[in-house]
Image (cartoon, rainbow, N blue to C red; front, side, top):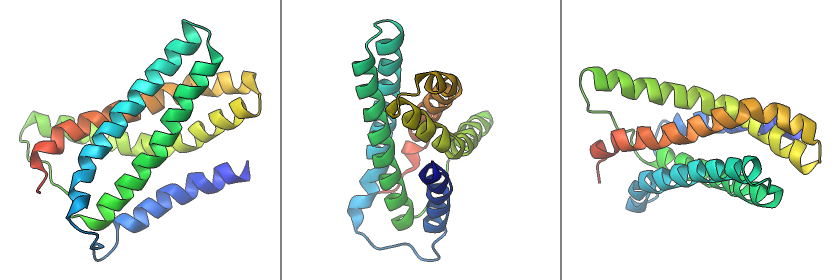
Length: 169
């Protein structure tokens, strides 16, 4: 499980380094489409997580549950690739809302970011336990992992919808 610890530190560290580059990478104008791709990825991740829960709770279908969760994990990796690519090559977009909506936006954004960092080791452990057939451990950890992961993916969609009018193209 060393790989889980390494990834849990390496992913947020790599994101922080790439976001903090003194000069943005010039990858072309296509990167300005990535926020929309990221919004779709977060939406699909949310749906996969919901369908995974339904598959296991309502239908007791372990195979379908596994497929939806694996799809969510793959989408998470794709999200990370798109997110890092966009933020390493495009200037940050400032939220333009005023008043109470600005507080709502920053609440969702900050909680999304903090929980997205914390959920990485939980997701990796949940998958490790499932793949290793340690189902009791898997069930214990997903009681915490699932709601956090779902919250992160849903708030990703909310943050995207709130800031999308302010993207420059």
